[in-house]
Image (cartoon, rainbow, N blue to C red; front, side, top):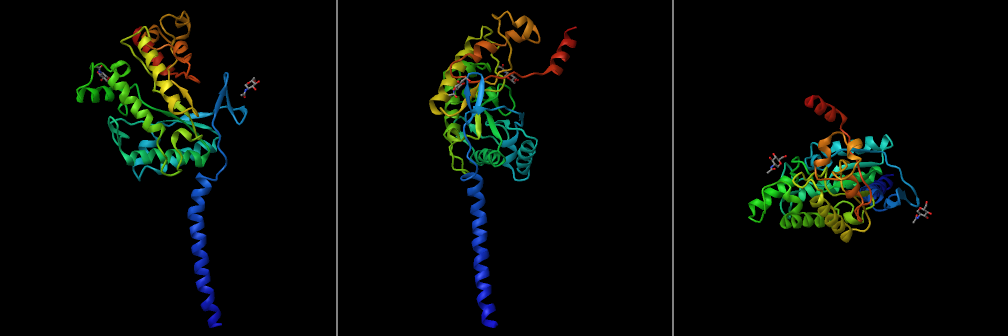
Length: 305
Ligand SMILES: *[C@@H]1O[C@H](CO)[C@@H](O)[C@H](O)[C@H]1NC(C)=O
Ligand SMILES: *[C@@H]1O[C@H](CO)[C@@H](O)[C@H](O)[C@H]1NC(C)=O
């Protein structure tokens, strides 16, 4: 009996250690390497396709996933959000893959990255994979929140290379364009520290959005923004041929399109330097977007009375 017990416990101890090791690594492998095959979402004409079949998007917008993943206390919200979305049958989440110079910034100055924030983005992507939710990742903001083009212009100014203090120099200043391209290259070639997959090779990423809601009001002809879109979409495709690319447009018709009078919310919308049709027709742009803010537009209407 005594001998039997003596033999049993060490074996049990060993067995539970093996199970523990299997569960620790098994979880990682199951979730991130040997999990269900994930394919890239592609495009055939005006149809999204996945594994040769039409792919329909039910999506939502949670811009905050990366920034909330940096701090331990808020990180669990990310898993909860993706879990809730997946449970509702949602298939795509749009989120920021940028934070330029703001709190918990990913890019702290041009070409300088905070590894802790990058690991937070790795985590967001790994969690998306775990929940089977694809991500539409946006690369910069037109607005000031999370840095945006204003931050890039300030950096260029601080480094003494900026051509102008106008926020719109983000689009035409060659130094700022190269800051942005360097940023894009770093993101696309990032190797995820959790999944081991380079972002450009990760099919859980639906695609890249060049910029959230671009406006270049200093050139209402639209030529400046169009030129930027052409250059940046081609640059993304040069590094990453796997993923779809979109601009991030609000959807306003430009000054030369007669439809601006019937489709745009108000006259001002045709003078922002963007053009839904022209911008979307760009060779390396795969799909487009429209942002609808009826509440704001009606409020503006009231102000104009
Ligand atoms: C694209 O769609 C067309 C029309 O539905 C179909 O005939 C064609 O096989 C598709 N091409 C690919 C590559 O899936
Ligand atoms: C740049 O944008 C910021 C935020 O929208 C604004 O406060 C600032 O006045 C703008 N600066 C210029 C030079 O346009």
